[in-house]
Structure formats: C-alpha cells, structure tokens
View 1 (cartoon, helix red, strand yellow):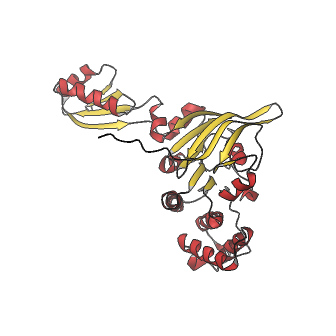
View 2 (cartoon, one colour):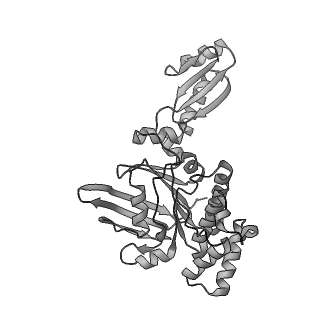
View 3 (cartoon, rainbow, N blue to C red):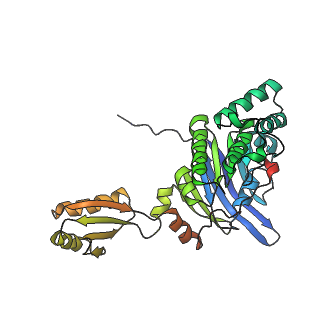
Length: 330
C-alpha cells in the first residue's frame, strides 16, 4: 500500500529577503519566512533583535527597505488594504477604552469594522461569552483585572474575524493562572477557528507550549528556525541518563560508553546525545548486545532558555517591554 504524503498547507505569510534600514543602521537583514496557515509561529530574540520591526512591516505599519512578502495571500505593498482586512494585531499594552464597559468596547470595534448594528451586537455577545466576560459586560473596563483586560483586548481584535493575528507579548504582566487561560484561548483560535498566530514573546515557556515552529532573531538575522525539539537538539548538553542496578552493571555500561559521565554514588551514566530516536536506539542496542539491563532511562535535552542563550549570547528577560506595537495597527 502506497502512503500518500499530505499536501503542504498554504502559506499565511511568505517573506523573502525582508530588509529594513534607517540610514546606515541595518535593523532587519534579509530574513526569509514561510508560515503555514492554521499554525502558531513564535519569533524570539533579545532586545533590539528586530522582532518589532518584522511585525510592523508584516502588519503594514512601516515599509520594508527591500524584499518581498505576501500576507494572507496578498502582496504586502500592492494589496496593503487587503492585508489589513485579513489581519488583527494585539499589542503588548491593552488598547481598551477605560471610560467604556466591555460591551461598549466591542461595539465600538464593530462600528470601526462597518458591521451592521444587529451583526455588531451579535458578534459582541458571542465574544463576551467565548471569553467568559458576559457577567462583566456592563462593568467599566477601569475595574478589570489585568487578565480580564487582556482577554477583552484579544476579543476586540477578533471582532473583524481576522485570518491571521499578530500577538505581541500577549501575557506580559499576567499571573500564572491568567497566562495559562490566555494560552488555552490561543490554542482554541488555531484548533477551532483555523486562525494563524504570529507570536512574539520573551517567555520561552510560552513559545515551547504554543508554537508549532520557532524562529530566533538576533541582530536582524534569523539564526535558527524549527520546532522546539529541533532547536533543543542543536544545542550541546543533551544526554541520555541511565540508572543501573548495581556497581557491576554500572561498570559494564561505562565500558560501552567511554564518553559518558559516571556517578558511582547514584549508579548513573550520562551519555552525550541529542535525544533523537536514532541516538536512543544506538544506546539500547549496545546495552542489549552486552546483556546489560538499565533500571531506568531518561532523555534530557536543553530547554529553550539554553537555546536562546547559546544562539544569541544573551539571557532572555521575561516581561521586558521590548515589542510594543502601535495600537493603531489594530
């Protein structure tokens, strides 16, 4: 039976040679992107890496100095209005109006999207329910918690039913429970609505939890791209940890893997490896041939913090306001 390879998803964003310069200062240095529809793409990078510039270009806020891009199937330069109609942007800082209540904020966005009165009310009610804000719909936004404000902010972005959403630091300043609630909302947008999410974040756990693919940007250049697991396997420090039943078994296993770090007290070996299936199979086959049984085997790979530090030479700074987008991009 011949297995057919499923067709590749259409691209939500395609960019080639995207460059931005201000005089002699190169902010973005020829980046290439292909982001499939219905996925979450995370762009990571230290302060000044060019993340904000990338999003501002792709959301039509500023022009590129060179390069080409298509967003939601439309040319970024020649079909800018069509791009704007297909996207939504949620900036790092909430763009809600504190003088209005939640329902009024949503109705205001419905008016800006030229929805009819009945359609605007229907859409507002639907989003209030989806984001669990119905009971607070008539309360002034000034009384909302940070998590409620972020939910309302994202709900306002969804009034126009965008196919692609740019989320700039969506959970900055939120407590852990509110952050996880926002993660669930983002996952549902992709799984249930087929929305594509372009996420910028300094919370590496957030990218690990949400993103189908991650790109690391540094000094205006993409220095790595792949799934979280692919990026982790690129970084030294991964290993397979074997725990043996006794000293004799430990000695026998250590003789098989001369590069392994040995801990006689804990009866463990740390065998360097990238955590891939071929590496794991090699270790198991060697143990099997030598009739050595391990009591436990665990695979350890570097986390995204180590990936970030290795690729950029700088540690991430969660919560630092690095990617504030102009709220007028909404």
